[in-house]
Length: 544
Image (tube, rainbow, N blue to C red; front, side, top):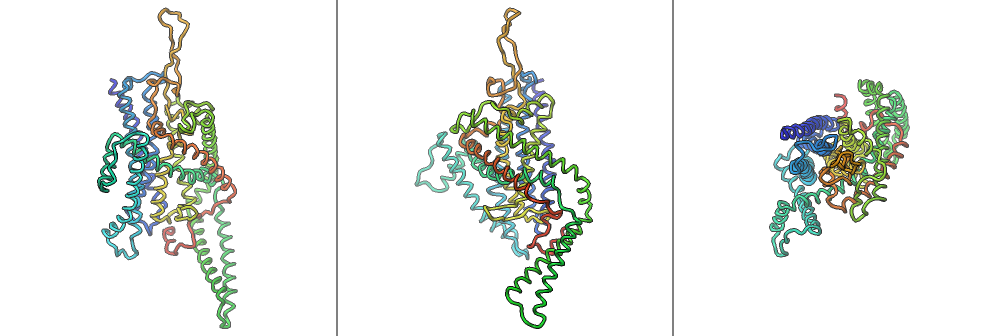
């Protein structure tokens, strides 16, 4: 009976995960196809982008499954279910989740260091005449990927050597050993009992880059997404009228310049330069007029206008959620600053001393199954979607240089690959962000336990009574099961310390992004469709 119940509970959790997986794959296909350029698309880059985006979303969806499984081990009265009464059985279930984390995180490492760079350079080696054969392009791309592979090996080697400072490993090969022996030693350590901690150290190192991406893109996306929904877009009719006036003004300036050379006199270099700029501006304005005309006839524009009240309500909801997250994160960081064990422990805190609204909301929803799991899933997906919104509005930047823009039907394959790589890095840091928002819930889920307290014995021999309590850090060790996500996040204290200060930077970046988004006006109805560096041929993607 216990075995059947175990199978049923596990199948329920993983069935939900499988359903979410199918939804994720469908969403990734629609999203990539919406933004990719039809003229520059390639099968390999498209499939890679879809798979990488799916891996990012699947990894983020594993946290709710982790919380679901530890919570379903117990009844609401605080006792373990029959199939979970054995410590070994509970350990096997949680180890399955842990191996799921390691597997997905290893795939992320593979994508970031090896596969995505290979596909990126494979596309870069393509020429317009398709002279280069597939084998030639693969060979050239392989040379570029070799650099990333060496960086990957150096990262693993550095992490293993750093990990030796905490856990002694086997003695490394001597200085006179060959490079192959050093590489062989590296893989032997990965395959030994220290391999998983070393891999965890590597993932945590890469998570630091994800933290920077979260501060840059997610914080901005949390402000720009709801405010864009609230403000809406400019009127198509007004934009067409304004564009027509701009065209007439530019044409008038061009006629004035051309009038200077009617008597045969050549234009000065300054006038020629101005004429060239005006002709380019006129071409962009005419293309903009064609796009505005298409947008005016487009049924999606009319439907969007009809759904305007719904968009405003959705935007207000999103901004309230963003403010709730910011307040919860602020309270959590404040709690760690005042009540944690200190910076040398990674600001680890046992229990919650300050009332965290999001954590309390999740705990309050526990009695009504499955509202708490739906909410934690929504929170996880909200972080990913706001990150995508931030990347779309900002573009791909390298310090102060913008490398690529993310535009509907105009995004180059390289930009999509970069977008997916950034999302993979962001997902690595998402688990810690959610833990910071609701530490007690992420640690124990909806588990409860029986606290035996002395009672005034009315019946001889029965001097204790059980009180059902929500699991927290004060609970007995064998009464509550900690999620593997929590254990994974607190494996190395110094990373938790960096993440703690990163949360403060995230709050600051969100407030700055909120001010910037409020100061900006409404977006154009054809935002991102017309740029000066686009060709007239690319307009066919919108016409058809």
